[in-house]
Length: 146
Image 1 (tube, one colour):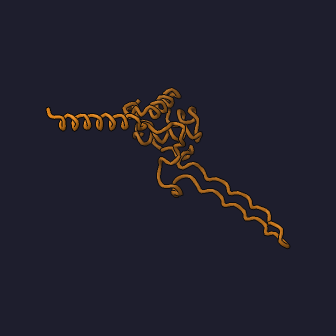
Image 2: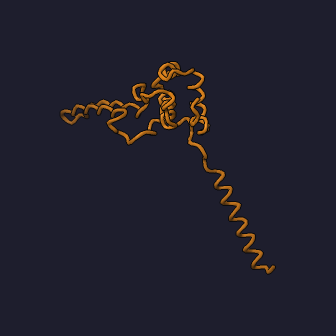
Image 3: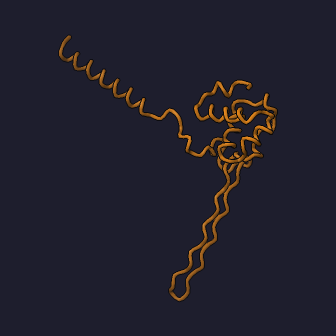
């Protein structure tokens, strides 16, 4: 092999190795510490959540003195993560997306495991199993009818 071809082969091997290393460095899963509130629909959707209240403006100053600052606004609610946002169907009819919504309601403190278990007539262990499957991205578990 000529010297020029050998250098090209080495450069190509180095480029492939660098690309593989870069691909391995990318996160495979989103962080479970991030809020899951934006998973359904656009923000401000009439179906879920609500916007916050705006703040109150400050008072103006008099005779050259500074005015008083206003009050900050209040934040809105999480999108689609309340107990009332849970699908109204029997457990056997829940799709994978419905089960994910159930988990998001649980993770954002919209309902407890006991409330969800009672609503869908299942054990709290099943609710925990769905949550673990969601966090591990183990979709086949959520596809089962268990």
